Length: 104
Image 1 (cartoon, rainbow, N blue to C red):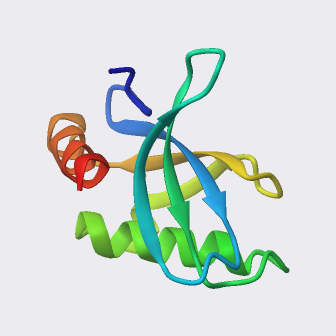
Image 2 (tube, helix red, strand yellow; image 1 turned 90 degrees about the horizontal axis):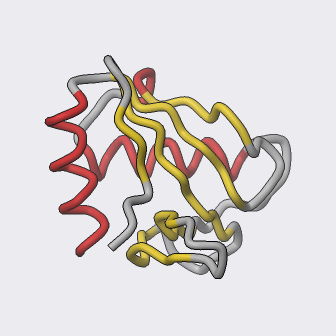
């Protein structure tokens, strides 16, 4: 299976497809698009106004990975559904946490 993240020296870049107004805050596994790129599907109850959905996504990911919110930032896709998040930390540890999250 294709991975939704890319490992870097001191962080991981995670591809996410966010659904705002999703009815609940949750992750819905990994999806691979027609062009072969994988992303973690996430939904939040927040509306896509003034960064509320992005903040909710960071909070959800922070809680799920048991990391401080300050270690997660949106590096691209600020106003799009497809986003790239930078997660600071030990890449090996982050990999195992994200794998557990993606398969849940």
